[in-house]
Length: 116
Image (cartoon, rainbow, N blue to C red; front, side, top):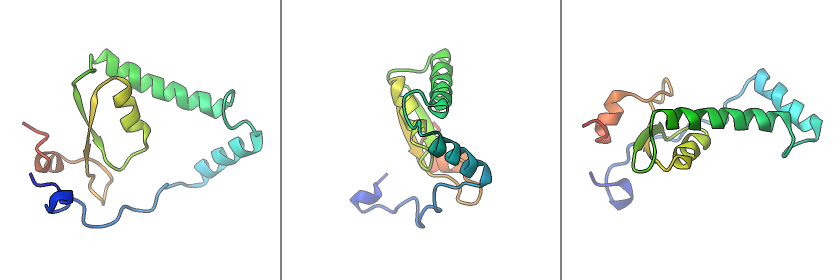
């Protein structure tokens, strides 16, 4: 497979959708954090985020995933998707998503030679 950076054909031919995608619920939570004036250590939302991150890391460890293991993750995702994989010493394999439904598809995995 010849990478696009080396003259190969890029997997993605159009730009990513505008990000972040949000609605009134996210706007309300953002305002809660902003108005609390506690944006870091001790903030309630920060603690909620850390618990979510820890839960994913615990799940990966429970599956005995770690050093040298490879996990397929969407290229278009929040940074913690890759960070939590790296935190377990595993290797994230980035795959494009279907632009219509924002999900990974087996066809895309095969195109990237991730299914053996």
